[in-house]
Image 1 (cartoon, rainbow, N blue to C red):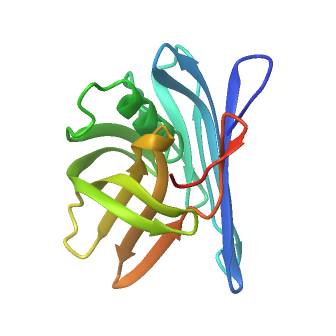
Image 2 (image 1 turned 180 degrees about the horizontal axis):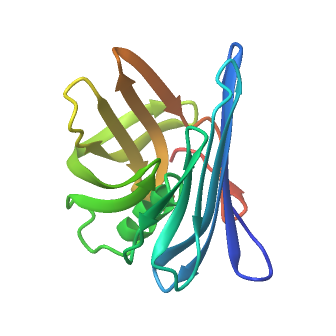
Length: 191
């Protein structure tokens, strides 16, 4: 996550497994404690050459979304985010919540529709990470499809940074773990 002199934030993410990879970028601004998204681009690489885009125009009634080689006009409602900025909104919501163990709903423009992501608080867990043992809050995303499962662990002591996420779809798990990071210019380490 980086900011520029104009008040824009750019959040990037990427990875590669064997001959497939991805790179995604979300650009947004902050308005008080809320994310105001501007754009999102996802590009698959290698065997999975897939592109997604979401563009938000201030004051517009629609969001432009590119999915499977086609553009869609989605209805804009206040608080709608993209697939990546929703992660930062979750973090901001938890930072500003006196009891960050409540269930959370986040609205996301994804593909050809708007989805409400419901995150249910599961409990507190201490995870063993490459940085040592870390106390976390565990959330599970509710899916319509019983064969899909998404879990996220965030660390309150690290401003609710995501430490681990596991997504299972079609019986195939994908797990992402935080290996290193900096917060306010300081490398993170377990206490």
